[in-house]
Length: 69
Image (cartoon, rainbow, N blue to C red; front, side, top):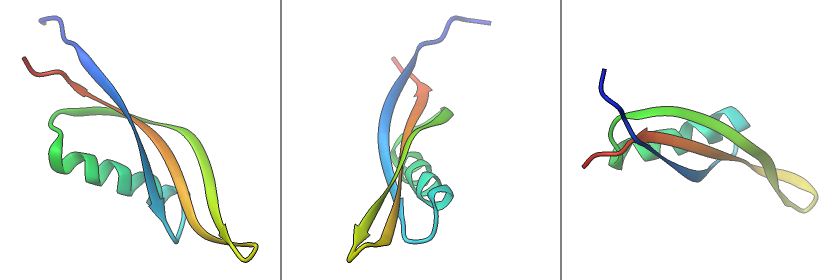
């Protein structure tokens, strides 16, 4: 097995439904332009509020992918 190098980026996904959907949206969007995604780690969860009510769930996600030479 050869040595590998991975890059980690941080994304923020949003959803009006749930934190799970927000995280899935972040990964799904990353998958469109990045290859060889390896690990996704949720680092923070929060919500946007409008008039004192939850309007959107937000998930900050760290995604790693294999660095390509």
